[in-house]
Image (cartoon, rainbow, N blue to C red):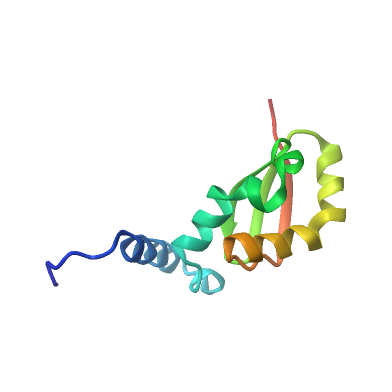
Length: 107
């Protein structure tokens, strides 16, 4: 094992890959830390302030994004916005999302 310094992003990518390998989920093998960071770190930029104030990403599992909504009406709204949100996440975060699953947040 080399003791040379490794860029932080490369280390994070390896950690993400190893976690997915442990979970044995082939669909997430190509997912990178930058994609995950983009979805979570640039969420408001990707989806807009109005959506971000009611919808929170909680899990990116391969190409499936799980989000929490603060009201059941937002789950319905996401259905209508899904195509646009997927495109924005690709453009802004570099993440390919094929499915968005909405869960209503319990208070």
